[in-house]
Length: 388
Image (cartoon, rainbow, N blue to C red; front, side):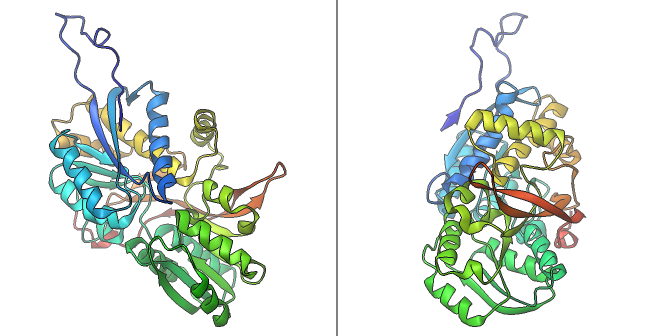
C-alpha cells in the first residue's frame, strides 16, 4: 500500500523553466497489519500518517511518500519487504517494525546497506548494546525500560513473591530481565509462553498453585486480550494483583477486555493524559482523525514522524549526505508528546517513565490514568556496551 503525498504535476512545476520539483522523499514502513496483533501496526501507521496529514503531506516542510507493507509478524516476510523497498524503491529511511524478532531479522542488514532505520516500537537489547549501529535510532524505548519501571514499582509497593510470564522471543526475554533488574523480591515462577498463544489454562493453573502475591506479565496485542480475560474468568483478578507494561494495557486492548483490567498498574513513557501542549494537540487530532483514543503505539508512530521531519527540515530534504541527516536525527530537535526527550550515546531514548492505573470512566469504558513518575531521564542498561 502506498500513501502518495504528491501534489499534481502542474502544481509541482518550478517557476524557472518549467522543470519538475524534486521528488518526495520515500519512507518505507514495514509493520504488522494482520494477525491478532495487527492493530499495533495500524496504530503506528496511523500516528505516523497523522503527523504527515497535519503538514498536508509533508514532514519538516519536505514532501514525503510513505510506502507501507505488512510483515504478518513473520521475520522472513519482513526481510523480503525491506529488500524490495531498498532495491526497487530506493528508500533511504525505514521505520515501522512492531516485533523484536522481525527487527532482529531486518534491521542489521538494512543499516549495513546505508539506510537509516528509526524504530517506533521494537527495541531489542542486542541493538542497544553490542549490535548498535550509527544508522539505527529508536524513538520509542529499549525493550527493558517499561518493565524496569514496573519492577521498581513492585519493589516500592512491597511485593515479595511475584510470578512472571512473557512470550518466548527477544522482547519477552528483555521484559523479564528488565523487571528483575529493579524488582528486589522473590520470584514465584518465571514462564515463557509461545508467541501468538491464545489459551493460558495451563499457565493459570500453575500460577494459582504457586501462590504469588502479584503477577507481572508482558503479552501484547491479542495475547494480552486472551490472558486478561482468562485471568478474570478464573477469578484470579480478585485474588492476585496484575502488573505489566503499557503494551498489555493499551486503549484498544482495554476496549476488548472491559472491566477485567480495572485496577491493573502498568508502566509507560507516555499516556493520553500527560499534561503538555504537544500531547494535548496530538490526542485531540488523533481522536478527530480516527474516532478513537490513541494508544502508546500511535504516539510512537507520531513521534517517529516528527523526529524524521526535524531531520529532513535540517537538511532541506536532501539525503545525498546521509551523515548530515544522521547528525540531525541525533539532535532530536522536535517536541515529543511524552515531554522531555533526547538520545543517549547508543541512539536510544533518555526519558521519563511513569506508572498508570486502569480505571473505569463515568461515561462507561476504561482508560489509563497516570499515577506517578517512577524514573526521570531514564537510560537503558545496554548503552555502555555500544561502541559508537
